[in-house]
Length: 165
Figure (cartoon, rainbow, N blue to C red):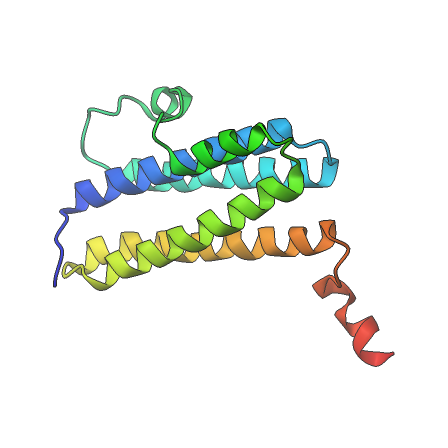
């Protein structure tokens, strides 16, 4: 069944989603002790901020305030990703657990975005959701690669060495 958002609704949703994920990565970077993992989470947080900026500059609504005000606002209390991270903090969360949460949440978010896009009739609105889904997939792949490295698995940069031996 077609689902309709107007472009501003889709952009507002995109901005909030990017901020929620940015807040998650900022918190994950704060609790991570492994410097390489911390750098990955910080980089992803910065990328989410950049993604939000792209959508914000297209957004015509005014209730979010300025971009800087909105991005500096506290995280949403009902953010699923942050709730999962907070819950796991009680069990001595480390970078491995934070990455596992990130992988699951990015995968779920991508599925939801693609499903929503498939029900949107307006091509401009659909493209907002499709772009978010692609960016989410890209982040999933970055986290997956870092997770493999953290777990001591064969990293894709080592694949030629292992294939030839």
